[in-house]
Image: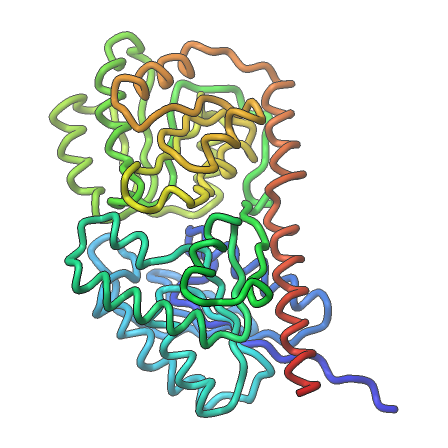
Length: 386
């Protein structure tokens, strides 16, 4: 009997490593995990500005980006999604396609897979309809997005997600529990790891600054305590729709004390966390997104730093239950107190080693990728039997 041929998997996502984003790291870990067990993986993604490196198995397409450099918004999405249909229809036939949000990319994949009679797996790390509803988006747009997202989820052969809370929301779309697998959420502990550098006086945020996150609370809170801590700086890595407003607010409240380096490589973010007095993460309450996990928490703790988490949801319990820092309401005064406490605390090497070890054990992206890999291969096997 001839040996079974390797599984052939296509990963379709508007972003992929080396872009510094949770989805990019998560999908690279999945692609690496599939390759390690012998699968043949092809990644269809976008071209990264300024990056001319070529990677075997990764096909990049030029796309439109917003002012912050992100592939976000109707036209940037369309510039990736429409060519994606042709790329999927004309490329080698895979056994399964794994697709990452937004739902418009899911529609493109669903259409191409229907034409080629292929199964697809939807990696629902978040739900954009829930995020839109909590961000004050026009209700008609929210309804349309909910309809599209629900159709993509129900059409998928299987859905991967990051937490039980997100899984519950997916079930509400009519997706049966046996077609949803919770693989967890984590961070690349190879890139984000502790180092020997001494602690500085920075408070560091790294990630998207959007309506969902409400990261502006850190600028407002820092302004309350900046005079008491003249050596301290607030560093806000990343982009997002709130970034320009936050830059203006920082210049008004604490000129020269808040840095906005923009979107930078993961190595630079990790270096900042290694010396940070604390990492910062937030989730705005009342936005319908309280079920979400905020991976910024893990990026900080993987480097040994404690975290100040402002907001509701499972991350608050995670920080409190595992002594990872301060979990407080999304309130300027309370956040200011926590940031002041972080600046006044003096971590030991043992404290930072404990947080990093906890993250490697409980929130490693390798473990998440292993669970996702097993599920994707199960889909391939099931499709082969049918």
